[in-house]
Image 1 (tube, helix red, strand yellow):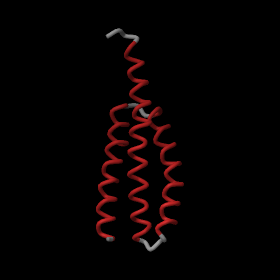
Image 2: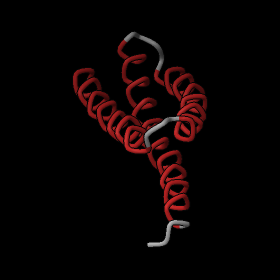
Image 3: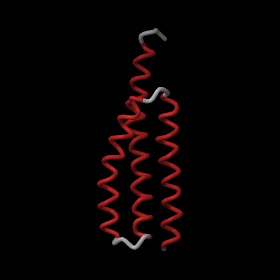
Image 4: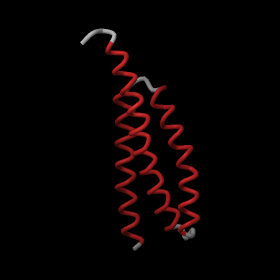
Length: 98
């Protein structure tokens, strides 16, 4: 691999982390927020709307952080791992409600 390919791979990895990892993180955040807000007696559609609106801000912050962080591995770990943890927690919250 040529030395000029390394920066390209890092940029592609950061873009993928920002897009895919940010999507997973945001999806987990929205799912968990809806479950917790509904459990707190907020109407379902109000909880859904609030979580989705906040999700836009969360995705933007995650995407920008993917480019500002020092380590690409840490970005992948936090975004993809955090998204998976929040999705799992959302599943537990939703099963406890129903």
